[in-house]
Amino acid sequence: MKHFTQLLFAFFWHLGGPGLLLLGILDSSFLFAPLGNDLLVVAMTAHYRSVPGMLYYAGMSTIGSVLGCLLVDVILRRAGEKGLEHYLPRKRIGYIKAKVEKNAVWALVVASIAPPPFPFTPFIMAAAALQYPRIRLLAVTGVARMARFTALGVLALLFGRDILRWAQSGAVQLVLVGLIALCTVGSVISVVGWIKRSRHGRQPVRQ
Image: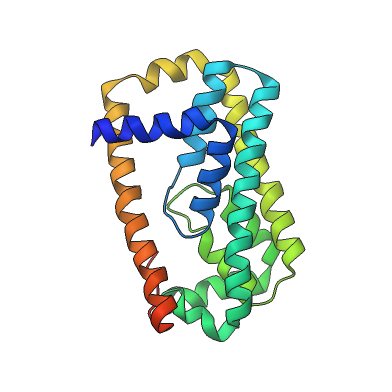
């Protein structure tokens, strides 16, 4: 698993900005990769230590996230509020809908900047299903995501050397292995759920 983790990290690292964009699309749509873009933005910025580079990495991560949200929006806007139960557990729909209906902008901002385990995609799903304007949804999410990734990039510029030393420790490597394992299992569950929904249209996804 450790070797697989290194290969996966090296793959996205080698792609650079496009890798961040790809990971952002996957994480914000149907795959499960908590902190994936965050870690890559921090690692790349800490390594290259360039303000323009940091903004580029943050921007590519943001664009990827917005594109992933657009994919979710297209599907859930068509499904509508009634179809939301096919994509989210019923016990969570009420809470998420209430937050979006009360103040959609604030709900989307918090979901976009809050770290896991705070849900992100379910709020995008709810906003789209409730027909919140698409342009506003993508704009709010994009601004909030850019703020998140930029803040992480600034921290990486300030503490880059310490971050790189810390990342090489055995404990952190073990955490990364666990994170990759969690992402792999979560992604498999998510993909299987999407496939079942496309065939039957009635089975909710657990997120």
